[in-house]
Image 1 (cartoon, rainbow, N blue to C red):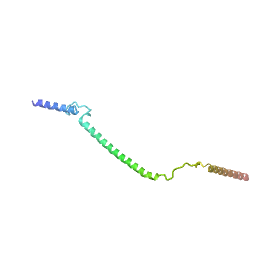
Image 2 (cartoon, rainbow, N blue to C red):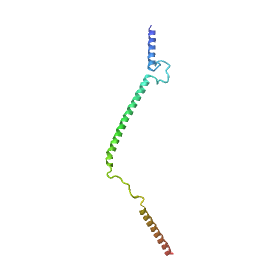
Image 3 (tube, rainbow, N blue to C red):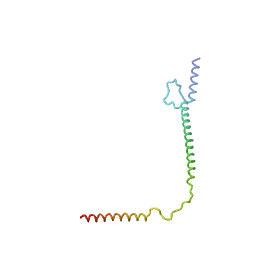
Length: 127
């Protein structure tokens, strides 16, 4: 009679384990390598995912605070960018300044011509 009660309790324990997701008793020799479907592993996975979610939420809140701070800084600096005189288009081009460049090229060529002539007369006088 005690053996029958022990067998009945063992069968109830195995039924409860199957309902909870383990499917095998720890004392049985038919343990498989994949124990990922047990309830304890599911709870551990859930707690790990919940912890990652909490870290992600905190990181998101921190980044939103940084974004708001950056917006406030930009808004406070935009006061110094106010235009006092409306911009206008120039009537003539400022660059390239063709007249100045033309005079500079002419003076450079004239200077190099003077140096070349002086060298020519210097060589001619020595020979």
